[in-house]
Image (tube, rainbow, N blue to C red; front, side, top):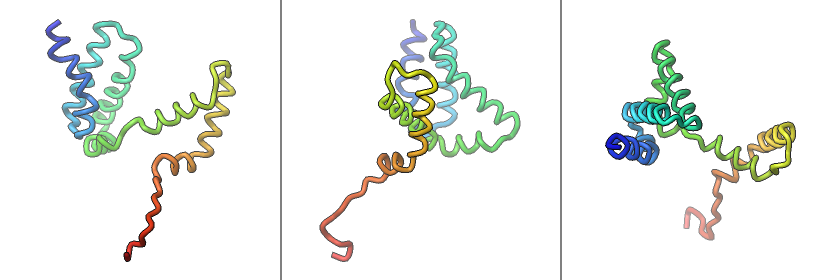
Length: 135
């Protein structure tokens, strides 16, 4: 219970809001390891695969001197799941629970084909001002 209150709950609450967004790579990596250990201890099948995949990639890159680890270490805040979450939301919004796998895949391909318009919608907030820059 002490481990849960002192380590696990603060780790889960701080992992994204504090560690990831501040770029604290070493602390982030250590916290991922603690979360993975917690998920194994409590047999949380749905929560133990993502940390394992991340740790596996990091250790593989470190062992083979692959530059990706250094890129993540230097630019941690730039690596996020926005694109994945965005496309999943768009797929869910444009399909129904009655669609089969092929229909969902076709819809995903259509959404991906229109990704340039989705990019503009998501990131290009055009603002029109009544004054010119010279004014």
